[in-house]
Image (cartoon, rainbow, N blue to C red):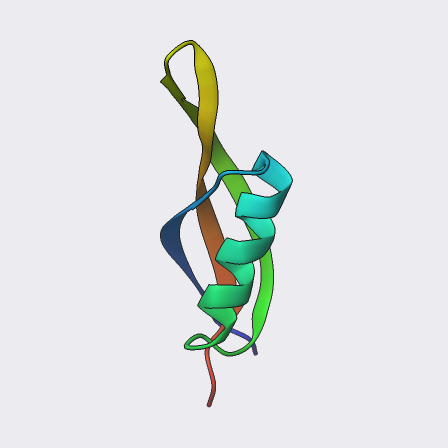
Length: 67
């Protein structure tokens, strides 16, 4: 029997939402083992001077618990 846990993380990038997602998963993988998936819960942008300066995502990351 497998048991999974879900944790919420926030990540950002000056490039794109996709880059924010990839950076968030890469960083989470440094301290969380057995990541099996993620759900992008929310996307948000930061605007300064009429320009998008940052892309942010809130994700729920799923990982399997070890025995």
